[in-house]
Amino acid sequence: MSLELHVPVTEDRNSAIHPKSTIIKRSVVLSGKKTSLSVEDEFWTGLKEIATAQGTTISEILTTLSSGRKQGNFSSCLRLFVLDYYVQKARVFTQRKETEEGPAVFISAPP
Image 1 (cartoon, rainbow, N blue to C red):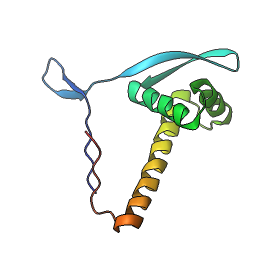
Image 2 (image 1 turned 60 degrees about the vertical axis):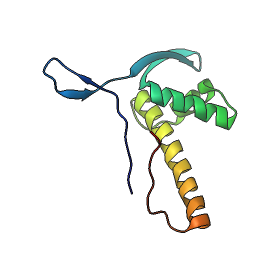
Image 3 (image 1 turned 30 degrees about the vertical axis):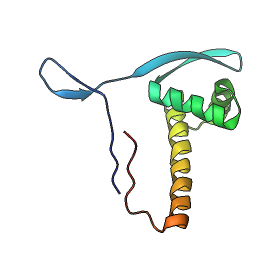
């Protein structure tokens, strides 16, 4: 299995390459209480896509996550939720593809 990762990078003054952080702090209201999340923009975009696909709102998803979370850090909880959604989606895609074409030998992430 091959997977290409495209991570934005930046060079510091010592010319060492480091991943560029895209963490953005967002304020949200959950059950009438204001809180904040600090997550990468890609996770927020994924959350918006999930809400659209499920016919719900970001607020409803976040409220559900907040009430049922086991992790102490809400931002981590959100990341794990988005990751799990896409892992499950990839499994379904792979299973369908294997049913149609036989076992998958090579899977490459889009650029």
